[in-house]
Length: 215
View 1 (cartoon, rainbow, N blue to C red):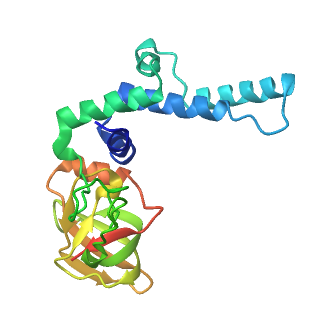
View 2: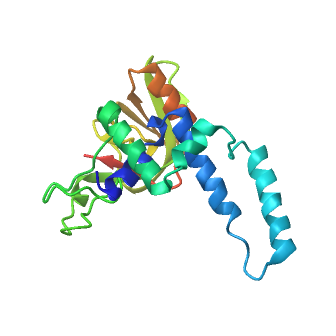
View 3: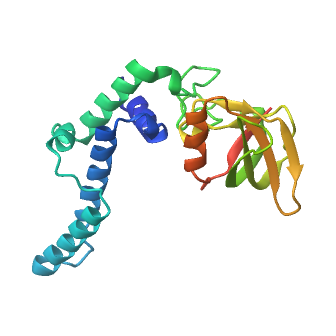
């Protein structure tokens, strides 16, 4: 597996990591921040700054002293990412959405990309709207349905379109059942049969970037 594919899997589908893999990822993240001493800070001042960061990240539960976790990073971060991605691909490949270019077949930069980084082919015409997700609700009147609430930034959302859930590390594009105009916001609902997956989406929170609604 090439490094781009490995990074793609781990970065965009982190929910598929094991508890130990996730702990190792956070440990590496914390350690990399601890080493980023501000410019001009040296000697005892730099060491005091580092120790403060160590205490902070330890309190946050991001630094690990578990040998089974730190051992995962013993060959370096890139090797850890490679092994983790290969395990996910071998055990849970159906859970990963590989956004391959419809023209040349190359893996796109992100699951939401609509232009190939290799051949330049664009498939933006599949996007009907972009939606800035603000809140998620369990639908009390439709068992097995979720409600997304937010703002339509571009285009128009309609029943029968597909909400792209790959931003949340979920290999699914769910069909929109009903759309409601709430004045300053828009709501739409869609079915998610798997109760555990519904929990994942509720816990995932909202989007920093707009999500795609596809035709």
